[in-house]
Image (cartoon, rainbow, N blue to C red; front, side):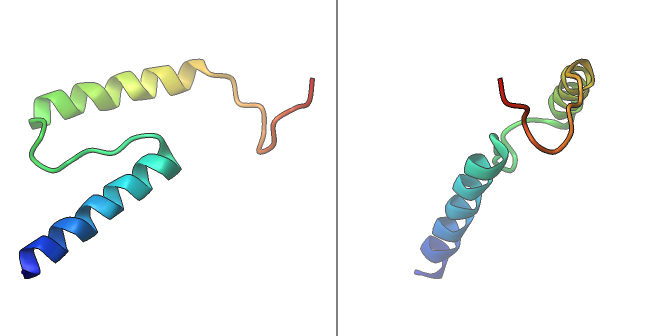
Length: 59
C-alpha cells in the first residue's frame, strides 16, 4: 500500500508543478538527448520574449 501512497504524492507534485509552472516532466519519460534539446529550445524562446518587469502593464 505504501507504493500507492508514494505514487499519489508524486502525481500530486506533478499536478502542482503543472498548475504553477505550466509544465511538468515525469521521470524516465524522455532521454537526456531529448531533454537537452528541449532546454535549448525553451531558452531560445524565453530569450525572444522582451522582459517588461514584474507586473503586467495595463492597456
